[in-house]
Length: 149
Image 1: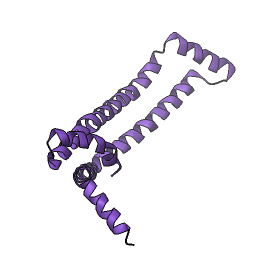
Image 2 (image 1 turned 180 degrees about the horizontal axis):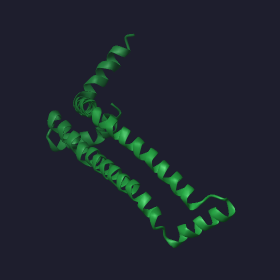
Image 3 (image 1 turned 90 degrees about the vertical axis):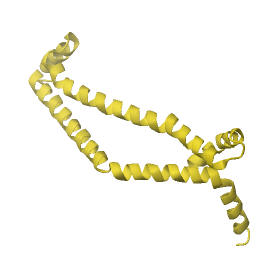
Image 4 (image 1 turned 120 degrees about the horizontal axis):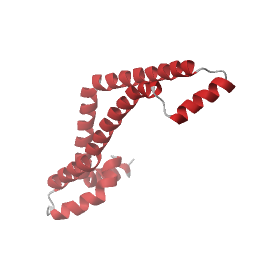
């Protein structure tokens, strides 16, 4: 309902373009919402997960041949904090493994709930379509019936 309220001014303009055809205007606004909001979110989400996976895979390799700045950090941590390069490397690899495990578990959960997520999105889009198309009538109905209570 909130998205339909936000998109209602756009719906009113599109309604004029479709010469009063509320179904065509509602469908157009929903399709525009899918194109402008949902598709980019899916693309960005997929990209972020893919990049995070590549990044997580490269961290241990990066530590095998660290640049000069990291080598200098290892020198200071070893001499002043008494943390050896090997202990730091093990800790980083352990943390990366935990993060990877979390990401894999989260991805599996999302994949397992794909049907629920897809059904939720379909219900959301259908609701938005109905709220856009029939919103004024619904508002009038509730305003009229609410004043008698």
